[in-house]
Image (cartoon, rainbow, N blue to C red; front, side, top):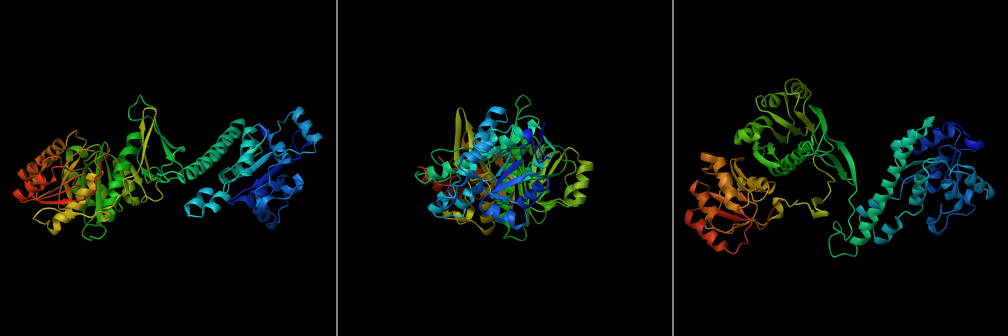
Length: 527
């Protein structure tokens, strides 16, 4: 254990802290607490001004180095009087060298870096971005982290309280050092991505060199199967509605729960935006099984939406994950009685509903999530020896230019159902076909190795409910077989991307059978 609560340490040396931060959250109070514990404070620039204006004694780093800040502040702390004081091992040889050169030790480094990423995010000119590449800050952080046995390194205001303890363990010092190196590595990765992207033909999100900064956000018992270790990680600073959701009832989330809940919430939110213009369809319910939608519905309220989605496929919804777009009341909660679910995710759950779930369904994970904001644009999928990376498929309906290619136009209700079915099939694994009617899915076929098989599965799932439904496909029809199958069960309108060689044959089959067909012009493979 190392003492940090007194003014002097080994051989009577005075304890010194160097504080220089861009994020000034809590720094004045932290400096005040250090001063009260007898620490000498060194500082620079705006941090120094903030500290002394608060009546706290501090020295400028330039007083220690004997050199003023130079080159418009580019050179402030790059000096042996600073890095020698940080890097010296606390043993007679190194301490003797410091004494011979009149250099004192620095026992605490509190630094966070210029706001490079924030400068890029606000679209600043390149010159401003380059000027926000910190040099002295990373050098001090890395020096302190290397010498963490003798120096505390702080890059996060949440850790300031550690330095105010009487003793700091070796394990805690090592944790802070690892956090410091992660801080600088993520910073360097952002700079690399910016500089590489600026010279690439690819979008900035996909530069020639891509560093994935992953921070563990949650621990789970195991991965997809019990013999696979697993954990949940956050990509960079991105938020995640499910990763950041509040669990208000039930057991801890599993690896598969996270994957399914994320899929359910994504479709639920897309439909919620789409249906917002339809007052009679105020609520959306999405049931997912193994990352595929199995029952989706819109209705006037959450209870009705749940009941319609459940009844769309009562077999598959058993053991599934459900997302709803509106608050869950006690009445809506009680409507889930009799159906085993793994996860329920909603924007709000009333206290009465949460209490009912806790008592009646203690194994059900009940999550409260916010709409997705600041989500990473990257979709990262593992390959052996690497990753396949793309931008997320976030194209909304309003970005399309749907074209009616048949003699018969869709009716108003068919248009509503086609849009609903299109959003659903976009979130299903390819090959995928969805049948929908009156704002509810009546048949889904997903993950098939041929389009006709996906259609056959959707038709079989729908049964008699296929009569009068619409059909959506996430990719084009290579033949007219799906059209003829759809007509045989009473499908009246079809939405597909178009663009196949045999489009004229497919359109002719629709005209022959009296079916309306719309080309969306946008494929949505999901593998």
